[in-house]
Amino acid sequence: TLSDRLADTFKNLRGKGRLSEADIDATAREIRIALLEADVALPVVREFVAAVKERARGEEVSQALNPAQQVVKIVNDELVSILGGETRRLRYAKTGPTVIMLAGLQGAGKTTLAAKLALWLKEQGKSPLLVACDLQRPNAVNQLQVNGERVGVPVFAPEPGNGVGDPVGVARRSIDEAKRTLHDVVIIDTAGRLGVDAEMMKQAVDIRDATQPDEVLFVVDAMIGQDAVTTAQAFLDGVGYDGVVLTKLDGDARGGAALSIVSLTGKPVIFASNGEKMTDFDLFHPDRMAGRILDMGDMLTLIEQAEKAFDAEESAAAAAKVASGDFTLDDFLQQMQQLRKLGSMSKLMGMLPGMGQFREQLANFDDREIDRIQAIIQSMTPAERANPKIIDGSRRSRIARGAGRAVSDVNQLIERFTEAAKMMRQLASGGGMPGMPGAPG
Ligand code: GDP
Ligand code: MG
Figure 1 (cartoon, helix red, strand yellow):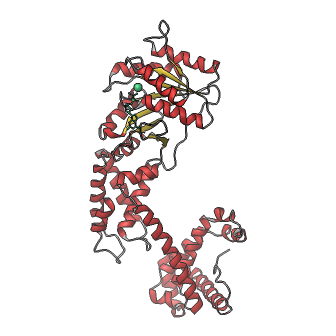
Figure 2: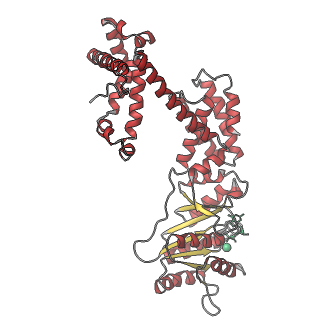
Figure 3: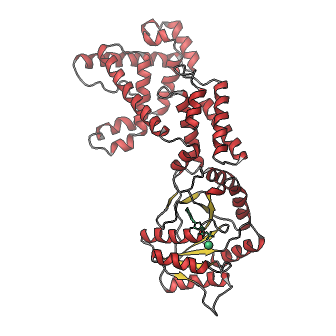
């Protein structure tokens, strides 16, 4: 897997903790192989790898993770964000029935999906109507009827002497039928061919124009791998669509098709279909798909745990230092950064019982202030950070120059630190809780 290979790449790097240009190149090669193995289209691989390289370069080196873990995390975050971050919801019509039209090649899974979607909508309290507009294949209408029965959803289909051979007419009349029978969602199943062809595309366009769908969904078999891209593009040019449904995810396809399609078309994947049972269907989850594409197993869980454990260690170490009075500017900076993390959590924390008391403190906390403090402390030498008493006038002006701040800013920071350290020593000797030192404001 990618994580194993990255661990190999970085085996000499443990403890060193900083990514060099050569490390990043070696990493990029591994990511490229992993994506190609997952059947991601080549241009998409190129673009993706470039983006990851860029981010790896700019990234602050994590102290919680080893380099392999850190790169996997970057790759994963990037994948999740391209795949859509959060799941896109279905758009419903403001008035009248919502019309959802399915398009895709024959065998993609449209007819199966139509019924699965109908069941899912029913469970959301909707009242769907299935519409059989695949009049190409002899058994297609019957197949939809059987599926409709399985999920307890009625099917609007042509009858002998009425609409046989006229899919556009059936589609148009189905909307009136839905209004008349009080169905609030219409799901239109359409015909597909084994390959893209002009006649099929024209029929799909005619159905689209006749029904003005709220959502046209492109249904695609995840197993077709590299071909998914050309098909997706052909349907985008031919009919156009708002969202994508990936089917047959119960197979062993790694899901590279998802990344290729989303990258090249910019259309979100909305649903995932993963089996022959009517309940084998769910909203699309970008994080799960990212894990599948990279085949990372439990790697991400491990990463999360490592990060959490590191935070806990940090706090414990800081508390111990405070207790012993051994509190440096480095610790000060770290506490500031912890506080910033808390700040971004402040809304959440405000909702927790007992945390309300911190709300005001956290709300007053200014991110830019921490950036300024960080710049100043990072312009100091390790010796200065450990023992600020040695920071005399000439050191102060050097530090100020390095941080791009005024000397008075440096003075203020050292004063604030000295006060905080004193306060913490008092608290520690008095057995009180170590507080949050020196929060500006
Ligand atoms: P259509 O031609 O696009 O309407 O595709 P169908 O709905 O008829 O599906 C084609 C075949 O794929 C059928 O045998 C379905 O049972 C099967 N199928 C559809 N969706 C899935 C799925 O998610 N997983 C699996 N394993 N098979 C599926
Ligand atoms: Mg079908």
